[in-house]
Structures are given as structure tokens and as C-alpha cells.
Image (cartoon, rainbow, N blue to C red; front, side, top):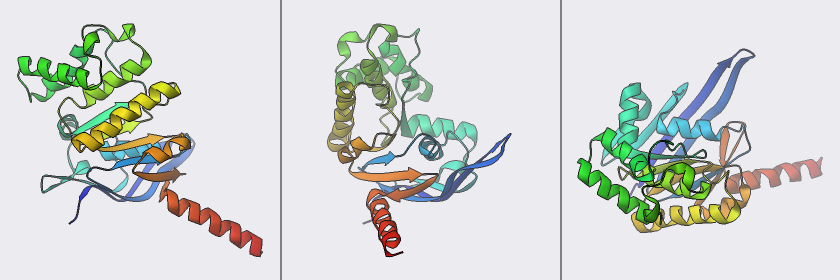
Length: 248
């Protein structure tokens, strides 16, 4: 049985700059199954964030197709209008950023209810109850009425995860969510992600520059200069190149 949830076919992205065209992604082909925790590792500038922005529709691709399978329906992300993609993303996909992007003038619970109000999936009273459930999930219910400035960076990231889960999306994409956190706090964030996959069946795609995290993903990919490969394929490729050099 085909369990494919996300499919990228020959996805490329080229940016026009003052110095000329720059190709950030080169013919990316990728399938992600429901319930996977996929890690994409790469150095700064390798194309990690651009790849996530192709999946979530934040940025427009240059060529190729991104398909999300939703209840038997195939959604071609980049065939929707910009407003259509924003509405779809708010309802179907949670996005977690390295910089948290919590609104500083809103309390934690208000930050989480905001996407609920925009999507109109819940009534106001239900929105508050849903937000409290999510704060309990990330063990921050006691801080519900605090402003973001009065909690730690790790706690802010957990609130950002709770906000991303507000509309109960099946997919989470996370852009360096542990990049600015210490190792202990980052480990707590990983625990939350692993529980979401194992207990709730969420599908998570996370990009990171930290190759030491590879062992915690259910599947590891590496992106280099805009090209994607399985970690095993990358390792095999390195061995082959080494052997060829020795033969010479």
C-alpha cells in the first residue's frame, strides 16, 4: 500500500541576483511517507530552508511539482494562488522556525489561539481550550498568561511548536528549530517531536546543519549545493570516489 504523503518531482529553484542567477535547488526528487521523521542535514547555504519553503509553499518554485496527498486528494501546492497556499498551509501544515516568531505583545495562549482564529476551525471558547491542551502537551500550561519575553528560549520554542499544532495538521516542517538552543534544551525539543510522531502519527520534516542529530531521525537525507541524497547514498558515493582516487 502506497503511504506517500509528500512528493517532490524535479523541483528546482533559481534566484535572480545582482551577480547573476543562483540555483538553490537542482532537480529535487523526494517522497515522504506518513508518520516519518525525516531529517535533512546540510551546511549553511546548501538549500535546506529553500527546500522547506518549496514544500510549505512559502516561496514559489522555478520548475517541478510538489504534491501533498490529503485524504485521497492530491494537492498540487504551487498551482494554488498565493492566498490559497496561505490558507491551505494554515489549516494543513504546521511550520516551526528557529527564531520562534512569537508575537511579543500577546500572551502564550493568545499566540496559540491566533492561528485558530484565522482558520475559523474552532469557536472562541473552543480555541482557548485547544490552546491550553497544547500548552499542556509541551508542559507550559502554568505559563499560559505570560508574555514571550518572560520565558526562556527553549520554552518559547515549545510554544512555537504548540502554535504550529493549533489546527491539528498532519505535517510539521521545522527549520533549524534547535539551532539557537543549548544541547539539553534541544534534546527536550526532540523529545516533543518524537512523541508527536510515535503517539499522534504526525509527519515531521526537519532541516538542520548539525550532523550529530542524524541518529534521532527515522530517515536521514543530506543536501549539498542544492542536491539531495540519502545519507547512505552519500556515504557510498564518498567511498566510491575514494576508491577511484586510489586506483589512479
